[in-house]
Length: 75
Image 1: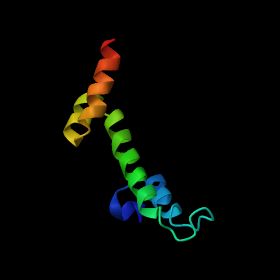
Image 2: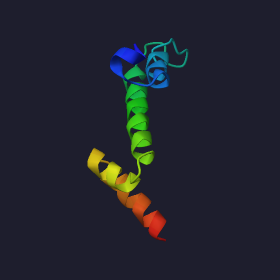
Image 3: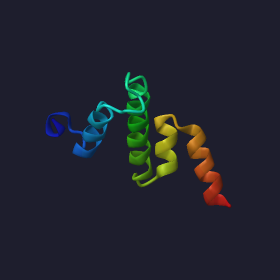
Image 4: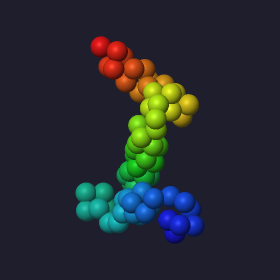
């Protein structure tokens, strides 16, 4: 599946793992929130791994994160 979608195996594994039964959430009500967290994490990590992470964050729409990172690096 990772080869067909050109997505990392770890990323797909994490998405599938959140669908496993969670005794603290037997109805699976938090599954979508967990999946969205993984998607967010994946995209932010890709931005941080780019040659210019601040620009990549801005281009991906994570402007607040980009501005906070720029301010931190400028200090």
